[in-house]
Length: 394
Image (tube, rainbow, N blue to C red):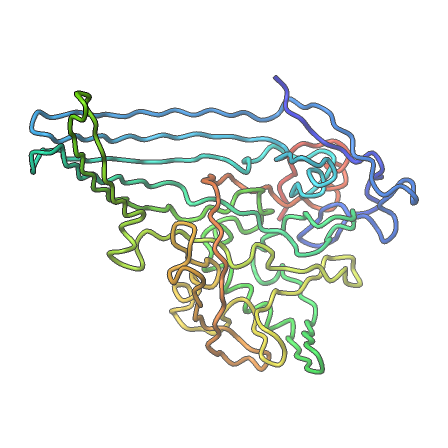
């Protein structure tokens, strides 16, 4: 069985490529449509790339003493070229890509299951002579989900916001433009040097970005930490014969995510504060991509998304900056939780900032390797025919 795919029949071939480390194809301004009066022409087609599989194993035993135990593990993988939705235009424009939006490479699907471990222990006994009393604990640990790092706007000029970022090999490959943040009458400016320092620190504290420097970020490739929780349950059966017929009533008390009742840092999962750390700022005089770094807050108190100081604590401090923590789909205080992190302001000083992170519980996903950055010449060839972007030279 073939999977589905989408193409935009109104999208012409790219007119040029970016220079520099990020040598992907580029559509020049006002040249991303074959027919200007046609908004989009999305075509549904088929393709044979991708796969899905899963495997599971479990052991269980019931003991005569009333004890029962079970443990299991499962793992699955799912790759496709697009996570299709109900609307063709949104399915095409929302598919994160690097080279050719009409020929995306196979990548982890949105619902990549990854690994999962679970266990259950219960004890049942008739303590009161009215029916069995049961106490049970269910434990579950699974991959916390993945994310795609993309630009917050249209980087390659094809008319949609779905461009995966290039992760610079070092600070020499970064090309920031001056960033001006305006809120009402207040204006705040961040220099390229400040953004370079903050972005370098952000990359170094993020395991996925740190381990894939010199590559393009992959779709659904940034792995979140595993999420563990345990549920505790009490039940009491009451059995009586009424009118000669057996009847029973069960009273049950469930503590969902009981681990979090014990300690606020247990039973929590993590999600990114932002998966769009960069905004495209066009090209420089040589044709290389320029961008700015995301900020938090409003001028005159806006801060860059990462600590730019030289403190040895930068890595651990910033875990809470890039990964907002929430509890089984709800925050610790049931509504919100402020993350206090060290950030850098436009004067280069560090300051405490509180960032409120909404709770979003993602489906379990799994990491895969990102795509290599092509040179300008290889990117031009890739735009026409390749399925996997080429490795950069040098």
